[in-house]
Image 1 (tube, rainbow, N blue to C red):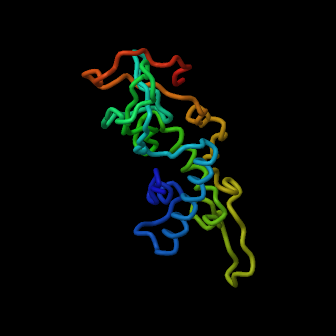
Image 2: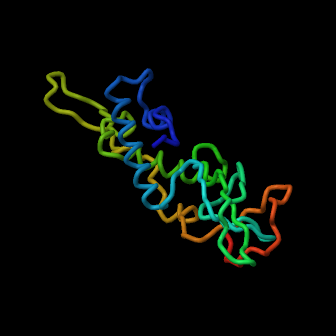
Length: 199
């Protein structure tokens, strides 16, 4: 699964010096993967657009009846060669299209990236991050006693927003409708089936 945030995004917020040591980079990659897996499981959908191909798709004035959304673009629509039998059979199509969300760069998906960065930053694997350590204010000459700066003990990090703030991107299992590409596909004579549409 491709990450939607970078290692440097997380490292910079935790105060790591660059270039990153190989072990630090590997740990940050792991925590990003863990956080992203949790987010994908919650949303029930990938975080980047996916290509889909569906056969037996009906088209009508309301649009294509597709299973994935939001639809970004219809790449092609080909009339099926074996429609259902009967004189009033509605033509069907094989539709290839790109659908989903772009959580890596779309401005409206910024809350997803914020949740990932914040969650990754608080992962136990990164407990040694400079901005998560208590700051030493003094130590004895022999190193036998240490006192810490209580003004930031521990330093305050941005807590992850509640996972419910990402719910607007959760997949709800409804069929979606995409207006047919122009010109109207050949053989389009019957209205499509009614449906609830995509929220």
